[in-house]
Length: 218
Length: 189
Image (cartoon, rainbow over all chains, first blue to last red; front, side):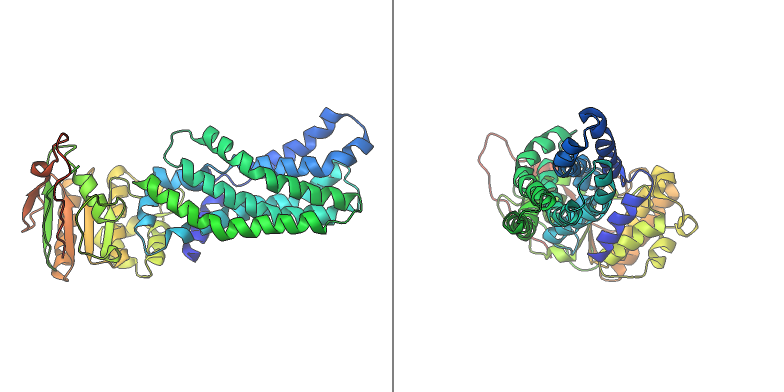
């Protein structure tokens, strides 16, 4: 399992690996939004948390179809399925690798981009906390979507359509934590729900992903 | 779909599958490897004993030859990749990225993976595709060494590898699409 994680990380960082794609997209969104909204700091400060959450979500979506498609194309997925690694663990490790190369960098970059959107001081802690708690759910749900659409040529569109509705609860509660934090309100309610969503999908979805992957490999 | 297939394979023995394109060789091999479910019948063999190699080699273009092989060695819990590299004449290519290999060299790397799995039953689907004559001979030698060590091999191939192995013609088991599913029984091991 460690070998698979290290291999996926190595592949992501080597040329053509796609690391930085999500990060660059996130950066572009955060840089362009102020141009679109206009030079109104009050308005920007109000929408900053929501824009950053939406940007992170869409950046996550960009790299989802790579989770299984590449391994399926070159035959590694068949070989992994016949290897001693349980397919459930493969799905878990794949989601973890996706989070380490997408969700984690996005979380770390968010405070810097918060500056660009004049996010109020009080918001940084809760923005980073909500992203750190919520992005793992995005990776695990995305991994499930990727398992569903593996083997479909250019399945990216179908993948987005399948995954986006599943992303909505995470987005609502994640952005709510960041917004309430920014305005100095109590965050414990949405924070608990966000953490609950993440823990539930991490516990359940790798098994479901492995199940659909087995069907798709036939 | 195949019906009525039955064979057994003893340690040290090989079985060669023949049959026209589309006759179900790949289906049979994928079923034995556990990638496809059986409709009827049984495979008396642990999936954990099987090393499967198909048309695609499962190589990562941006990793080197040694890295590709090392990954599979770690997945299968073995560590020695040098023997496999030597046996398939890949030592001089060890540090070359896989995207810079020729088709035949990629195939050799794909087959070298079988050795690092440390599993006794090799299930091979057209293993000699894109190999030159010398490589085919080298591959046949490696299969013989594997068999001599008590291993087993099940090959779908159209090339005579010089193995002393019975040939099973898959074509005759093709199920009549109009009839219902008959007895589908695979005896293995």
